[in-house]
Length: 234
Image 1 (spheres, rainbow, N blue to C red):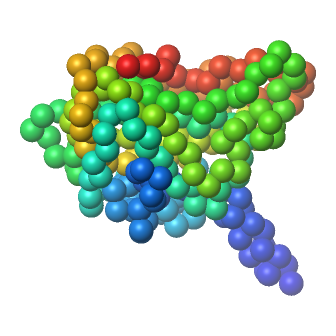
Image 2 (cartoon, rainbow, N blue to C red; image 1 turned 45 degrees about the vertical axis):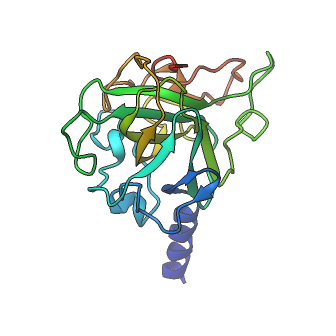
């Protein structure tokens, strides 16, 4: 009996977590998992687990293996990710992009160093009152799809697009935040001449004690700023 209770608890834990295995372009999700999205480590791709160490290399693309495909998307259009099982924990959802250098293979480029810029964010809705841990404060909470608009002035080229959902339900102390991460592979067309920035590295962009990675039980927070650099508006 105890054995089956443990199995049920393990199954519930997996169901409460999630992953981002498919891109959505022009409102149409990919037909299969891990095609234009790099397959994450089995702790996520199979078990729906999260990254908890902000200094881990998994903060980049969750150990994503070499890609299989690249999807074309026009600058200024909307790009999204499917959240398998839905986003089951409250917190912000953010999007970063990194341009693949000319001559590099998008399928194997590692995106190390200061190459990432923030291109989108679904953060807390703030009205001056106490912030909650439900959908009223967190628009991405319980969503099965999340998206952002690719800046219209981003230069054309190949990009890794990184989605992260930051779960704050256990983040009462530094190190408690959980990160659900995937990297999609896209070719941006019809781009502009902008210079995206500021550029940051993963790992390196966050510290475990960043205010945006801590969610105290009390007193209630009345403001929230997501971690990382300012978003590049393009």
